[in-house]
Image 1 (cartoon, rainbow, N blue to C red):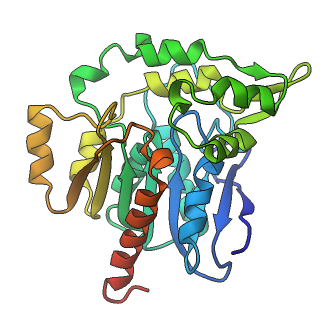
Image 2: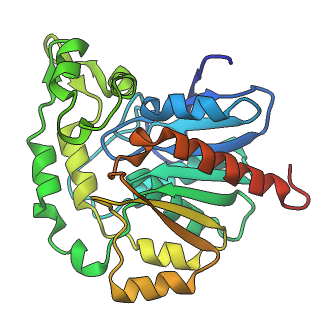
Amino acid sequence: MPLARTRRFRLPGRGQGDMAAYEVGPEDAALAGIFVHANGFNAATYLETLESIAVQSRWLAVDQRGHGRTTLATVADARTDWLDLRDDLLALIEVLNARDLVLSGHSMGGTVSLLASAEMRGSDRVARLVLFDPVILPAPLLEGTEGSPMVQGALRRRARFSNVDEAFKAYRGRGAFRTWPDDTLSAYLSDGLRPAPEGPGLALSCSPQWEASNYAAQGHDSWAALSCGVQPIDIFTSETGSTFRREAPEQERLEALAPRVTVQTVVGASHFLPMERPDLVKVALSAALAHVRAIPNRT
């Protein structure tokens, strides 16, 4: 299989800089899908799994604003929602002139994909969504997010390392990375670190301030996006630590969306289920692509 190809896209109307991505699969094939990473991570983290399904289909894994190799400007102050990330994704899809996509993502990336698809519900840009533990919370849990433990933890995160080996040893088997395979951690670090802007060593590509702003900026309405869309949506949630929370009112709303929206809880998985269960991601994305290709007048 050919190695992943690096791509860069200038997004009209989205400011200076560009969006970085990895492309896998046959170069002459129509674009089959786009994968969007979780907060604090990057496209490279999921690349090995996407490469395994790209034998006969072409996929993009993108770095969102403030992550990986993307150079779009970030202003963490006064952010209230993820609509800036949504609009970046919308602009990318327009630049690509893509149609009948499988749009997929993990955690924040899943929610951004959902928000973008809701904006395109009258078009043929997106045919199906596959979301891995998206951040979809009941309204009461959104109150006071600026002071939440997630925000404070991000702000305390160590931002600089002498080299990649030091970062690998600091992360391996700890915290969010506790269940990650070594290869996946190495893939994340390949684009998760960059030369420090001042002085020697390496700095996180996603700054603690930007990561924290993503945790705090929860003013978007994920439930409205879930409800108003028209595309089939496959959601996979984790058994422990899931960010897709539905109390009684939301559960009733969810049941009313069946069978267009399906939810499956992955037994034994944490919020980092794509890292823990790449086999499940491969099967889910392959099945989604098969569904799209089976739709009449679509290839």
